[in-house]
Image 1 (tube, rainbow, N blue to C red):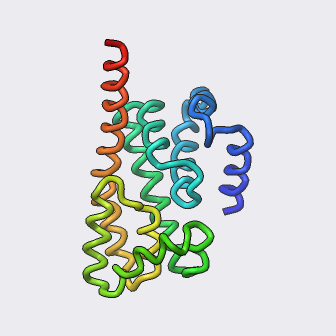
Image 2: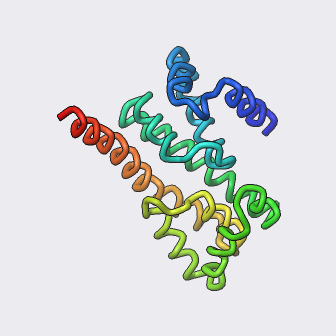
Image 3: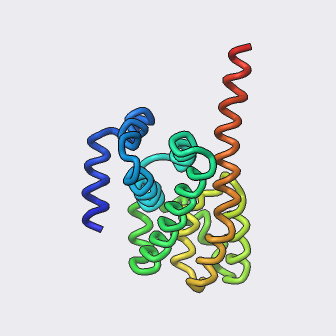
Length: 182
């Protein structure tokens, strides 16, 4: 945890969380360690929402290509999701309130009244693009959801949204560029 905090501070000072060009230049000359650093960045952006997930998903595909970018995005996001579930389970609502507003949390708490319904709601949201996945992962940590239920929903559901975001962002950007070139 100390290493991750130290890296986040170092990367923040380098500006790689706010400037895609700086992130690309930072990772470019790190052939072997670059993918590891990128996965760490993905983990951090799930646990500590510094940058929007869509930006980092696009960065993975741009820097590493569609296949390896997808894999690095998936690994980082899954690990980050597992960590945030654990932290929410361990430290409870006060921990969540450091990362999300009480208003956001209260909006989703009503879904936790019935655990079986919440499990289905959670699974549906994890598969659906545009859902606030990180908040929902934290929320799941506050419920009675079994770890293995959470684990399998994340493992089986995340690839679909990551692929949708990655392909949508890449091909959507190409389409927009094509429109402006015409």
